[in-house]
Every structure is written in structure tokens, then in C-alpha cells.
Image (cartoon, rainbow, N blue to C red; front, side, top):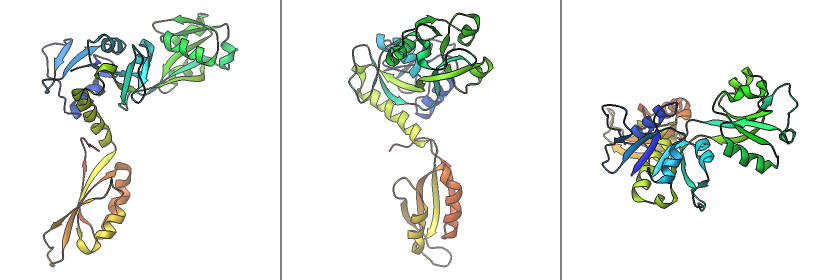
Length: 296
């Protein structure tokens, strides 16, 4: 199985980090090659431009790909994993939780366009013409779409367009260029995409499970502690765990009292308050560790 991943840019490092955490270490190569092996002999990596990855997957050069939803939507149809894919669609298997951004419709703050309807008969500049045309059709507005390859935010100020559709993460660039958001066009993040014919394949499912286990571990911590056996119910009441805690008998303490070892997975945001409450009900030797992967 071959996975297409971004070869550079802001998505490259987080994607390689995800592969590492999922147990798919990418073997070092002498130079930046198009392909790389992983520790799994059945899985290899194809490095490509983020915008080209959807086409690599559609054409069969890769079985699955990791790139932004914005890129996949621009290149053609995208189907939800739970719905039937049409010919040419990519299947959106999993939101990988990074690279979040939005495609927005924006226009000059002091201009005549303040609603989507005001665009009728106007011109929109964008690096995402397919997504923009689909959006305009969806809102019932007839406007010309001009494709640009950079500096989209400048086009309304040089009379190339009345508005733009562009990516924003924080909105800072739009504000600097005196552009106001009129509408959200697409919420995007990095996803795992596949061709319909490989969905359900055993190796694809194995990779999907590995990625899901990494995401499930994010924001959770593993707690281990000792507690008096007679206070176990109180300890259980304190722990906001993932299911019930694991409880094991241990040797008696120095006073001959029965003790148990309690292990539990908790949300990271709950750790601070939980530790104080556990100490108040007699827990000792409390250890908190990070979780690399969690298969639920």
C-alpha cells in the first residue's frame, strides 16, 4: 500500500510526526526522493505537493493520501465514509485534526459588497475556482470566477475582482488588507483520503486504526496509583475515566492494610483536580504519564 503525503510546507512535519506516532517510521533516504519505505514492508510513502495528492490517489499512484479537505474538494468530488461515493470521488476516511483553516468569501471593508447577493454580476478571484463555482451555484449567485495563483487578497484593490475566496486561519491577512469576511465557504483540515476501491482493504483498515489510536490518545493521560482497598469505591468515584479503572491487588502496606493498584485513562484537562481529590481519599504514589496510542 502506498500513502501520498505532503513533500514540504506546513503540512509536511505534522504528517511525518503522525506517521511516527502511528508506528510507521519513514526510512531515511540519501536525498529527497519521490518514494520512501517504512518499517512495514507492505507500506511505502509517496512524497508530493499537497495540491497534487488527490489526483495521485485518484489515478492509482497512491492508495490513500493525506492532505487538506480544501485541496481534495478543489480537485473533484469528496464523499463521506458513510455515504456512497460517485465515480471519481475520494472517500474522506478520517479527520486528522491538524491544518485547520477556512475558505472564506471576503470583500473590501469600505466597498459595496456586504452580502453574498451583492456579488451578482460581479467577479470573484481565487486559487480555488472549482470550490468557488460550487459555492456560488449553491447560494444561487451568478458571478464570474477568475483564477489567480497568489496574492489573492490584493485583487480587489487593483480592480481585478470585486471579492475573493481565500484561505484564512487567523484572519490577520484579511484585516491587514482591509477585507471583511462575508461568508464561510468551506471548513478544512487535514484528512486521510482513499479511493473507493481500497476502502475496507485490510492494510488500509490497519493504517486507519493506527491513526485513530494516535488521535484517541491526544489530550488524555494514564494515571497509576496505590489506594487502600477499603477506600476503593471512593477512588472510583473520583476518577473520570475512560470506562472503569483497572484494579489489581498489591502487597499490604507497612501497617498490614490491604492495598490495590488502580490504573485509569483520564482527560488531560481533569488531571489537576483529580490528583487533589485522589490524595484526599487516600491514594498514594500517583503517577501520570502520556499515552502514545489508544485503541478504543
